[in-house]
Length: 191
Image (cartoon, rainbow, N blue to C red; front, top):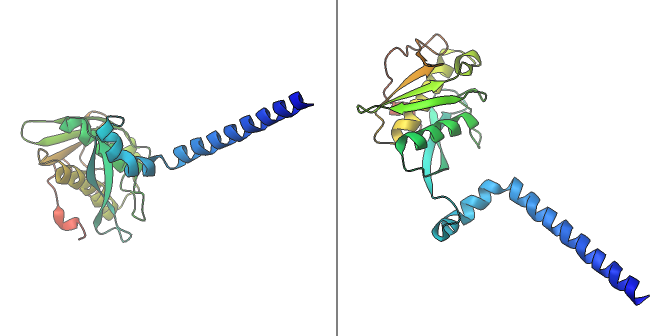
């Protein structure tokens, strides 16, 4: 009898342990960003997590007239091109709050180059224009979301040229000329 009780006790402890491990794993999956933001600085000092950099991403306000900054943390990669590409990837992921996304969610940044004059050339897939909602306001928000997010976070980037599938484009949705590199427009940013 005592052997059976010991065996049942051990099985119960094992099941409880598995249950607790499952809860912890679930919390880690669901609250990954919050955990990293909370414990990130401490873990960075210990060398357990890659060092992070705070940036501002610009998304459209609810009226579609202004850009509003949303803070985000990206991995420090040591180079402007790599970090700038991560900024574009974060823009594609969209806002976390109540702001409006400025790029279609299926858009991909194929490449980002930076020349010695400070022009960032970003090569997107066709989704940027094919899935764009259209309209002059939406096109302005898309363009200046990209331009202002890059120029405001990286002093080395002065202007942005947008390509699709490796070729320069005239416009994203037919309303704003993109034949020349675009300079930032800080007056679109709502204070």
